[in-house]
Image 1 (tube, rainbow, N blue to C red):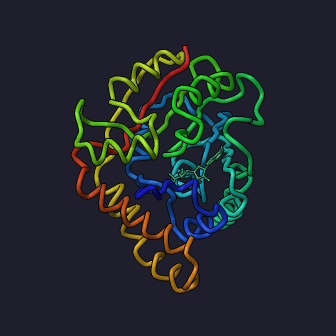
Image 2 (cartoon, protein in one colour):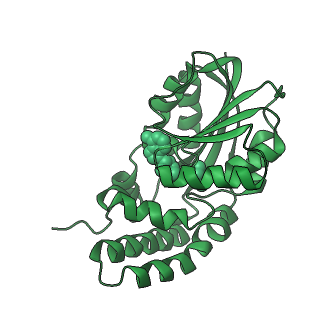
Image 3 (cartoon, rainbow, N blue to C red):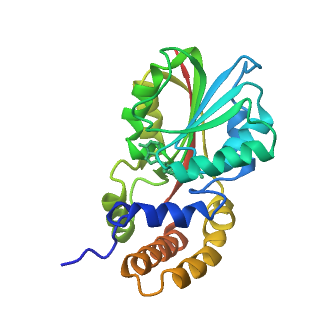
Length: 257
Ligand code: SAH
């Protein structure tokens, strides 16, 4: 029997990349939340080296760049997002200190202990929270920071429909205390964790998708993959609206010992 909740990896990747490239963000978040997370990080200067992993088209990277000195490298698997990233940096005239390159977050082009800060919004799940944190730690200087947002449970028990959805989509989802313990176990002092407000999902992520969905469905009229993909996005949004008391994104900030 076909599964009801197809996860994103079952669809054509280039279609997904095209769809998301028409949006400011590829995951829940907001400029206010990026700035709030940044407020926990001390000691950045013009010499600082920062990486934004799974940067997408760079929505949050440009916010980071406006609010931090230092050099930022954005890395994303999809070249289409990186092209948009570099165009934005040029428009903002910050291309000499903010650059996007395509690559994978589990095969980083940095030297050991080169970075002061590793940023990653809604993307570490691609390689797993603990695995990503442990691997990325090698590239941070002693005293450097990691700041990641990650899907998390707000409660210890959940209705079975939403539990089943996440078990299929990302079984690594866990409660906030468990995620903080994983951060610590991966070699960081937990500095802060905070829940992203609902507007990060609704105003900044789902609402802008409504128009993008219409455009996409028109362009790919008759394409079953495209129709399934949009149905899946809408289903995810409905689940969020129904169960947002039980899960959301949480920012975790840690400092390398
Ligand atoms: N940080 C952005 C994008 C989040 S969506 C935002 O908050 O808007 C997750 C991103 O991770 C996508 O852009 C996807 O292309 C990227 N990604 C997926 N697997 C990756 C990998 N192995 N290495 C680097 N980026 C990856």
